[in-house]
Amino acid sequence: MECRVLSIQSHVVRGYVGNKSASFPLQVLGFEVDSINSVQFSNHTGYSHWKGQVLTADELHVLYEGIKLNNVNHYDYVLTGYTRDTSFLEMVVDIVQELKRANPNLVYVCDPVLGDHGSMYVPQNLHPVYKNKVVPVADIITPNQFEAELLTGKNISTEKDAVEVMDLLHKMGPDTVVITSSDLPPRLGDRFLVSFGSQRILMPDGTRTTQRIRIEVPKVDAVFVGTGDLFAAMLLAWTHHYPTDLKTACEKTFSVMHHVIQRTISYAHEFYIQYFLTLKMIKS
Image 1 (tube, rainbow, N blue to C red):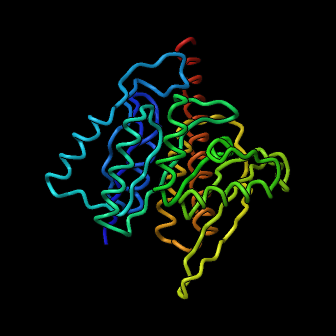
Image 2: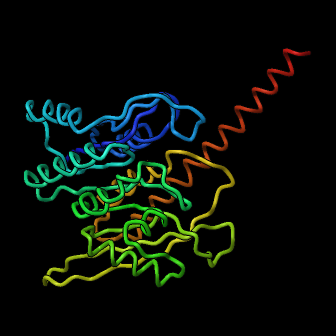
Image 3: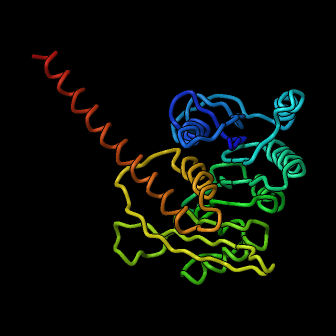
């Protein structure tokens, strides 16, 4: 059976972030993806300069109404990432709630993009909207450590803190929480990164159990953009296949991430070798 995803994320002309990072990998894995852009920029905001448009609630509403009028607003998943407008984010919540009324089994995967390494890279007024409106309707969230701390108001200094933060996020709404990266020391050495996950599972007898995971993944000596968007998309895909096995879903997600990054580095090295060889031939 075909699974349909409504992906509401950023779009850039130059580079691979947002929907350009999420849509194609999901399609490769067999998902049908409808994409709506939250922003349309010339390039990602890590550049010195960027230009473009930030979509508002009215613009999102018009797009969604067009989908609705054609009776093709039937989704199994909603995936959201970077945005810069509070009204747009509030409209996302309205759309998710409407889609869940139509399909109670719909799963909302939210990457609460707020910032990293102690600083925000979206407007400050998005924080209370995420905390009070978005996270409560999400089923799966993928914050980094900074975002998890910001949403809960609790710092993570130990593994126990990480578990407590995930429990606080569970209480806000989501049944699955993955802290994609943390600053905690890895047991395997400095060349690894520590991630945490927690999943509340409803048992057949009506009780709930919680699955906790701790994963250490190899670090890569390079900087990439769009990795958070790819991670959220792949977690959506693998939790679809392993809905009650967060460990396996995360392992497969991190495996995809690692292989994509390694292949990107390999292609980049090949490109620069060929580039400099060509320059040398031209000069000679």
